[in-house]
Length: 522
Length: 101
Image 1: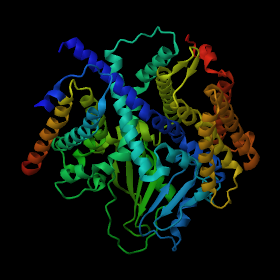
Image 2 (image 1 turned 45 degrees about the vertical axis):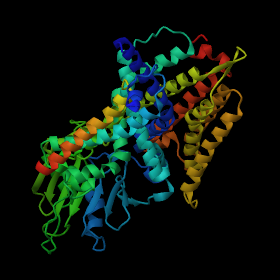
Image 3 (image 1 turned 90 degrees about the horizontal axis):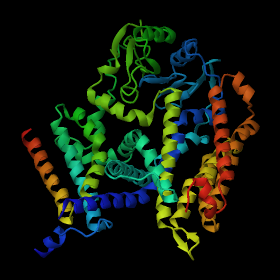
Image 4 (image 1 turned 60 degrees about the vertical axis):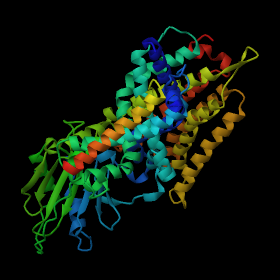
């Protein structure tokens, strides 16, 4: 066989397999990316959704930690024997201080007034649900497997796609709808594929990688175990060595002093958590761990730099810096960093959310390209699309009104409502399914898309209003009360709503009129 | 011999992938990637808990890459070889590494 012939076959197969795998995985990939964008914004949404989190963001240098922590720990009823974990205000945009011990409910404090606040608990799960939708959790093991395989498919598509861009000469000058969609699909992914592939890689690992690692672990440990965590957790998440109790009762140092000492020892750490063991014993240890923002990609996930102090006099017992971790742990963190974004600043978070929104568009262009290629023209003038177009329409555009409804319902449904979360997610799924019916019912898909976008836009714009009317807040209250993050969520929702409304109004009614919208000639 | 001939004759067009290549790509790709990554554990000079982390992370990526490599093979026969030969090679390597490593 000639080389040119085999090269032609190679290119054909590369393209064919990209198309086949692409249309199989794209809708699931889109769902993962769509809800993933909300998951990136999870810290902000979880502050927005809960009345108990509507408190000012306290200045962390001014907080009197002792006023909240010391009385809880001094209480002889509080079970400190298995260790206590304290999460400091500001971690993941959570303005409260949280104290937790084994077998207890988390205690929440307002760090401005030092008063205990009531937690909504299970009633309010908006942000958590959006995050769960991102990786198939509502469908349990089945959902994990499906989304895991979709992530592997995503990598398959990215690798194949990048090879195609390198070896095939594409013409960007075409004016018809097909070549426009193809151009934008390629352009977008040429720019965003590096973060995209890292994020899909870790996604696949979390959904199927760990569960599938049993044989590998068994071989690596030479038959000792098939539980991956038994091998890796001593490296990634080493436990505090258990210290023998002296069984005496000693006065402990106030928490304020301990935090101050830790800050003096390593000023580059943003402290997030405090883990306490053997409190009120002369062997008491306090481990303060956090994130070093000067070394992004190297810490934050498993690698948490820490300072361990004695609870009695605050003397330094141990210290771990970012680069003290084993290199495999640092590698783990650098791969996971872009996906989990623990402890990063607002800019990084919004930037990644922006990149992922663009890639959602790229996925959309890919599907549109497939549909254009499949389209038949009836009687020489009426374009006739594949049924997949209706499914894609409801999945990709119909998800906007359904999610908008989720945000509106968050403030309309009363917190005391029995089985509140069931109603909340139930209505969301019903609304989404309704869009499937609607997209098959409408003769013109463009008209259905227009309606979904306008409805979604209205719902997203209504959600801040519901927040004000039913929650009893207003922008001035939020601004003056130091709750800018929550105000920003309101503004963000309104802008998203406006954007959807704008696109919905601009979108033409019928496919034949779409030329000017996509700037194409048919 | 006729089966070999059938499998080793290149198809006229690459526009159809077919069930044979699909199965080779998905299952063969999984075996090649999984065993390849397991071999990597024994190549990386560290104790098991440390050396398993990199292969664990790259496992699914390797699956995707191996599947692509297999399904674009010039003939069905070579797709089969691409999934079988590395699998056997890695399996032997792992056996040696465990027994004499």
